[in-house]
Amino acid sequence: MSTSLVGSARRIFPLAWPVFVGQVAVLGFGTIDTVLVARHSEVDLAALAVGGAAYVTVFIGLMGVIMAIAPIVGRLQGAGRLREAGLQMQQGIWLALTLSVLGSSLLAWPQPFLALARPAADVAAKVHAYLGALAFALPASLLFTVYRGFNTAVSRPKAVMALQLAGLAVKVPLSIALVGGYSPLGLPALGVAGCGIATAIVMWVQVLVALITLTYDRFYAPYELWTHGIGRPRQDLLSAQLKLGIPMGTSILIEVTGFTFMAIFISRLGATPVAGHQIAANLVGLLFMLPLGLANGTSTLVAQRIGAGDHEDACRLGWHGLRIGLMLAVFASMLVFTLRGSIVRLYAQDPVIIGAALPLLGWVALFHLGDAAQCVASFVLRAWHIATLPVVIYALALWGVGLGGGYALAFGAFDLPAARGARGFWMASTASLFIAASGLIALLAWVMTRKRDG
Image (cartoon, rainbow, N blue to C red; front, top):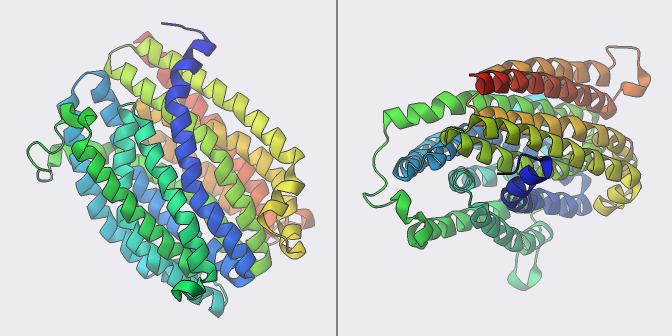
């Protein structure tokens, strides 16, 4: 087994690239919505930014709990305990359905998010309509997360990628028809609400196809997923998922809210600043897919090697994955900074929106470096079932420095005119990611030194 960086890359990339492509397809949902709504109206774009921040906050936090299935199943896969891996997936389905009740309720009644954002009345009405549709989409999204986590853990990410690409292919024409209207079918222009309806339709179709795949594809036969039915909820298996999933979900929730609450607070500055922020935020999400794919591939192999009892190889793969992620992030950041003017014009033609977004893209390039480092480090830590200490690191860095510091800069608590407005939030959030990445890498070094020596 090769011990070189190139050798590790050859093992990681076959698992990483399908996750990257699939997650780019998922981000394509938001990208196509952003482009269509930006051309539809500024008010709808502001509603998309606020509503999208609310949805991502709810979905990502709950998704993080469910994604504990990946490191747990990864270890079972590495140990050859396939029937137990199948049982964990069944319990993930029960967990997803339970969490959907909470999440859909928050989306159907989004008053807490609106109280934070304080949008104008016309924006608030559109946020309500958008989130109402996404409340119906959430259960399907969480169920698909179970399918995604299980397939990633058993080294079958292409099965997920195929459904995500198919979903995007359906999402694009649906969003076009529902956002701007389609007179031959008598469809009115629904604006941002049409984005939510299209997403709900696509997500439920994906879940249906995933269920058919799990039932009839012979690859899944050794896991005995449906041999005895889905089975009832089991406290021991659910406890194992929750023990790892709750701190995982909390870390991801802190990470996401440290970013999405930027949109909520920036919306207090008006529709134009939040519209510019939405473009920068969407680009950050696109860039994040590369380290996310790499982190998934790395953590899957690390978890499987831990399950097989080969800690030395697990440690080597973890460090190599982090180094590869940083090298790719440097290249991507340089590209964004060089082409920032052209990139913004791909999103919008309105010179006012372009003027609001363009100054933020320099910060996007720096932001991505810290984002990539913390992403890979946190995923490798989860493979080792280390999830509680990262919560503390994320809270201090992303909420304390990023959100708190950004609020102070943006709204003039300090005499720094150049940092006021949306730019202040991006400055503070970039600094917070570098702090978080440093803390997580230091923790990872400590954990892997102990595991290798032990």
